[in-house]
Amino acid sequence: MSFKYKDGIMVSIQGLKLILSQSAKERKELKKLYAQLPETRCRRRTICCSLLPEINLIEALSVIDLVIHLPDDLRRQMYSKIISYFFLNPVEILMCPFLDGNECLIYEERLFGCRAYGLWSMDYYDKLAGTSRQGKEYIRTHWEKLGVSLPRDVLEFQVPYCTYVKKRETECITDAQLMHVYGQIEELSGKFSQWHRLFQQIYFSDLSFFIASLFYGTSEAVNLKFAIVNDVINRGTRARLKTVINALPDVFM
Image (cartoon, rainbow, N blue to C red; front, side):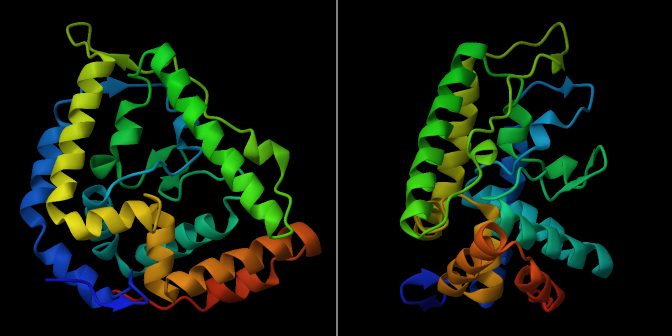
């Protein structure tokens, strides 16, 4: 079993449908792993929804399966929001594509990063933030080599540590326990080793990049992103983005 490759990169809708059909057991197991985390409640200020967190392949498959089975109009809306997020996240602080007002459209399938937000200790969350800053510095230098200076407020933005997430008084979880659950999810995703690695190494664990590549192919998705970001930063226009979004096909039908 393998995805169809083009220049060594996973691009096939048929391949995705195949792995969806063969990963049902693992996606059910993912829900059991999520259930190891404490139930939480918060004030729904959607602070944590200021980004689409990094994920692994098995989480991506669970979300994609949910999107595929949405009603037609809502599914097309999701495509548009996810693709727009991919193209614009270097130039805007965007809310998660799955956020609708104060509600999460995939709440039951929400990702480990969403579930763990507010559960990490402040010290460990600071370490995660430091890693994120290093990644953004790499992104900044890469875009500058291409002649594009990204907005400083976007590059410096960091989701703050949350003090509003509350657990049941009888429940507690440590950073080590959170990492253990995360490790189990990684191990589960790693059962699809070839695709798991590609999702990390080619798509940088970014669901929006992965989905954009399913629509356009990986190279074309990257080229379009550069052109759209360059249009926004250096020309002040979003005409190309509007044209691309209006022409989106329903690739999963």
